[in-house]
Structures are given as C-alpha cells and as structure tokens.
Image (cartoon, rainbow, N blue to C red; front, side):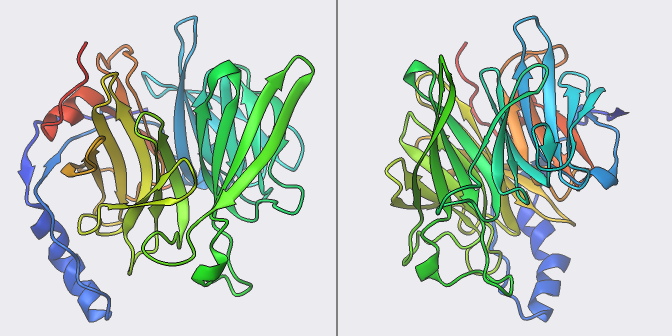
Length: 367
C-alpha cells in the first residue's frame, strides 16, 4: 500500500486546466475543440494499492462480509485473475484465478459487480459472465457465450437484485466489424444484452431475455463499456465512449428504449468511463462518472433525480481511470464510506466518500 497525504480542498479552474495545452493539441490535430465546464476541486486519496502495471487493472467492486471483513475485488485483465484487497487498508490479501476457459479461469476479465454474496465477472475474450460465490470465490456458473445471441465482445455489467432472489443482469457488448471499426447504427441493436439469473433448489438457471440498443437518433450506443441502473427512477445509464462526436452518457429505461436524455454533454472532455450511484432512501443522491484522461482525469457528479451537473473532482496523482466503485458502508478509516478509482491500469486508489461529497457541495444522505 502506498500512503498518501490528505490535502485541503482547493478550487481549480477546470476550464483552464483542460482548455489550455490539451485543447491546443487537439485543435492542431484537427479534432473538435474541448467544451468548457465549471470549476473542480482537488482531493488526494487516502491510499493506493501497490502498483503492478503487468496486471492491467480495470474494474473494482467491494463486498462487506457478515463477519465484519471488507473486501475490494479488482479485475486484472492482462494476467487473467482477480486481485482481492482489504477494502479499508488496501492490503493485498489474495490473487485468484488463472488463464483458461474453465471454472475459476479467466480470459481478459473486465467488468465486475458484487451483489449479496455473489461476484459477477465479465470475461471479454471468453465472451461470457462468470459468477463466483463470496468470500471464497467458489465458481458457480458461466453464461452468455452460447446460442444464437452469444456475447461477442462484452465489457461491463450491472446487476439488479429482484424479489425472490433472482437477478437481472445487463451486459454491454462492444462488438466490432471485421476491421475493428464501430458498426453502422443499423447494426447496433445489440449493444446491451439482458439475462435473468435464478437460483433454484436444483441449481442455477439463466434465461437470455433480450438485447437492445437504438439504431437511429441520439440514443445510438456507439462505443460501450460501463453501465449502471437506478430502479427507483427506472433508468439505465450507459456511457458512450465514442470520444469525438458523442462524449456523453445515454439514459435508457428498463424497457430497453432510449429515454430521450443524454448526461454530461459539454462536461466530458475525454472518455466517459466508470459509473456509480450514491443512492439515498428518499430517492435523492448522486451519479458518479469518470472523465478518463491520461494527462488530466476527473470525476463528475450529476444529480440522481434531475441528472443536472453538480461538480467535478480531480486528484493530483490519479489518472486514466477505468472502473470506479463506491460503498456507503462505514469502515475503519472511512466513517462515511469510500470511493475507489483505478489508477492508470496499475492499481487502485481509495478516497473518503464524505470528503468527496463535501468538496463539491453535494448533500450526504440523511442518517
């Protein structure tokens, strides 16, 4: 673990920070000029895990065990394994898995989502989702890589826990043409696949329910990875990483149709990436998103109810963030929960969630 000193929040003119050299470079390359946004705050992380670029870390999720343990799980897509840390301290506890196609084996694990005592892991090059039981990561089942609607190039996922112990799983599929280009809009109707996963007395069953994605208009999903849902407000947010013409998050309904809203247009400067939700019981809260840049990197917050932009946070050290995750569960050293962000493909940084919310003036949930 690499210790980091917490510094006081300070206002930073984001429009200047991102519209200076970076904007000049883009203009010289013939790219569209960067939009301008409001000011940001700078916040240092509490700690970072030990860095190992060989792993090519991508996504993270936490699990709070009934016995009081707090686990942080990260996908290592280059070494085909999961990295398990103490979520409160960042100490590495275990490396799990190996390359292959069998149970407890992975081929480029990317997205990870934890719900109840289950970890769902997307494997891009095995074209499947693998489900593991916590805390021992016992393999339970895989799905998505068979049949006519098999996943082709899956990346991210979000899991909705349903009444009766069922799970609805949404998986983004960033399939490409033979020359690795984005397909034409008419072929983008399967950007999200939806599965129903059910645990029965006889084992597990999986039903592929449907695939969806707009094929015309503002709701087309060009380049997809991160997805997150909000059952309270009936929304699925899908980041469109097409960097030059889109640079926003599309809002879909649980009916699989574009809801007519795009989040973050004019705010994102680089690639919209990770998505996480800070949810309050009264329906309020905040959407956390990643603006993934290698020279400058920001986390933008949007109102959960109105989807309006609230503010941005940058870090003096954390860059090129893929996956993010937040937990509202208190832990040692994080009285109000924690926010985790992958740092430049090599490790994970942890921020105090309460300080992050306070920094942008975003209200915390009522106790």
